[in-house]
Length: 142
Image (tube, rainbow, N blue to C red; front, top):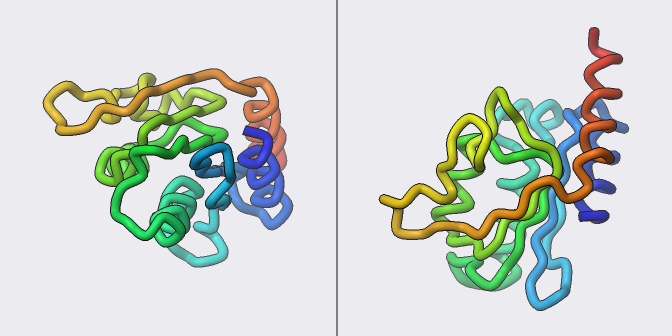
């Protein structure tokens, strides 16, 4: 999670919403990313999607079932869908997102029983550090 938090800090330093992600496979970080929606002028350039894309290139397959995705904010519907489609084995996230979180807060796409893949989810890891980054960022915007 520390790698994901470092990515979130990097995002904040360039004016992006401070969300960071890291993909770990066999104890090794194989991908890391932060939000780039402003830089790319692309609302889909979320940290999770960018990290997943990097990880897929690294592993050379379309599945991440032996990987853990660490992210500083509960994934939205778009990212939850990518997590299910790439069959991420485990998701660990820091702060819940009661407005858009689809991994337990607003909905639970990653563990939906009718889908062909359900993800193991661990929530609240380093929640305080992530929440502090998000609050500080949005206070400067108000």
